[in-house]
Image (cartoon, rainbow over all chains, first blue to last red):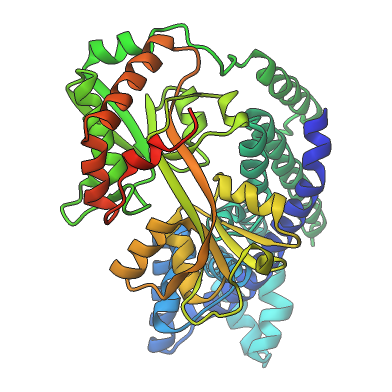
Length: 214
Length: 276
């Protein structure tokens, strides 16, 4: 079909941008989420309060509003970001909020006794986290985090409203130039589905490896 | 405990369904129902415009749709003896699919007549001639004509004829598409794009009303002939709309509407100059 030959280079570029947005935002969001989860469990009240507020705001407002706010709103106070950094910032902050909740539930799932036992034999905080808590927490955390990654990959389509030419925008563009909307959106939906299936398989593999009993 | 979804079977069903679906989709051209009869029977004309391109269509202080296109739409309905008009906001990208899928009855939003579009929808006789300008930041002195646009970041409305123009005629252009004119010209004001291609009136209005630091290049980029669009294959509807538009042009209504919104320009005179 000549539609495919016309659209293919654009689709490949769009796919590259979609995957890049998804992977980078997930990486940043994970680091952010991990730190926020630790902050929520911290002893210091202001630290906990800041973390709770962040999660509440970024889970409680729509991602689209966050993207538009960062791209069109921030310039009004002098912060001007290009389209892709704006999208990555919004996606990371948004994912970070959800991921912090996932990580927090992972921590909470590990019995308090584990912390106490480790401290009682003189282990330092970081050691406890690394050797005792995280290996147990990660099995609980993996399914929801995997889901969040898949969601994030689809959420990247919202970057199209701030001029980023990712996969969905390519479908709109070629669709409106050729008037073959249905074909373009079906093709793009299939591409998203394939990408997410790969992520899903990755998650299953990871789960199996980390689930090996000990 | 593990129930594995049988991925190969799921995939097969999905692929077969999604491949067959476009073939079974109803063809966009031609409607079985008589549009004019339906609209007259219901007493409601659903008109679509962007509501984000002042002075053509925008939302005023009273949160009402307002502008040249809105006044024309209201007058059209009156002449067609349709009691009520409902305005539905949409974008240039969605006007054609919207008309084809009966989301609205007619688009009155300065849509340019093109051969490709004519294969998807029908157009009325022209009701608007629009000069498109290259807008730049007020401080910009380097971009003055089309040749200066090569390699620049150019803002346009997604799905508009300007988007097509930029992609086809400007070498190495970094074309950035926005939902509407206001967002694109705001980004020009912010400085994230070097130029924006829009109706001269829209840019001038926003520069004046919203204080956007944008200005048009001295010469027009091109002129567009715009008309109303509606579902294909509705000869009675088209005939009635054309009759109404021609009446608007000849009896002075369009002159009055354009003087109200376009600062002295008489649209009826411009339209009469067009080759018939």
